[in-house]
Length: 187
Image 1 (cartoon, rainbow, N blue to C red):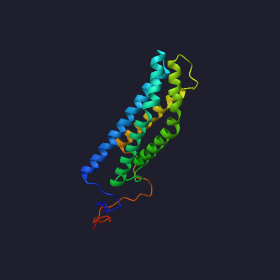
Image 2 (cartoon, rainbow, N blue to C red):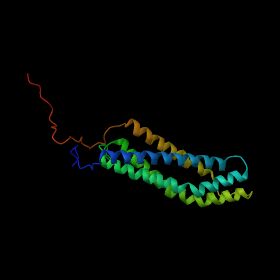
Image 3 (cartoon, rainbow, N blue to C red):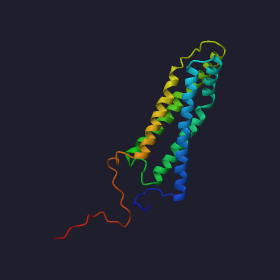
C-alpha cells in the first residue's frame, strides 16, 4: 500500500520524475512528427514543382508513420505507468481518463487509418515526380495532422488545468492513519 492508503503502485521520486520526463518528451516528439506530417502533406498537396511535391509525399510515406507510432506508444506506456504510480490514477480523474482514451484512439487511427494508406501516398509521390496524375485522391492527408494536433493540444491543456474533478464512484483516498471523521463542535 502506498502512503495514500490505496493499492496504487509507488515510484521513488527520481524514477517518477524520469517517467514524467519521458512522457513529456514523447508527447513533444509526437507533436513534432504531426507538424512534420502537416508540412509534408501541405507541400505535397500544394502548388510548386512536381519534384518537390513528389518528394514530400514520398518522404511522408516512407519516414513518418514509425516515429509517430513509437512516440505515441512511449507516451501511452509512460502515461499508464504514471497513472498507476501517482495519485491521479488511470480513471480516477476525468482529465486523465480523457487523455488515456485520446491516446488510445490516436494510436488506433495511426494503425488502421494512416499506415495502410502510406503505400498509395508514396506511389502518388512517384507519379507526381514523373509528371503524371496520381491514381489516388490525396485529400485525406489534411485530416491526420488536423485531428492529431488538435487532440494533442487538448491533452496538453488537460494536463495543465486538470479540469472536471473525480470520476463518479471514485472515493477519495485517505492517507493511512488519518481519520475520515469530521471534527465535532462542542457547545
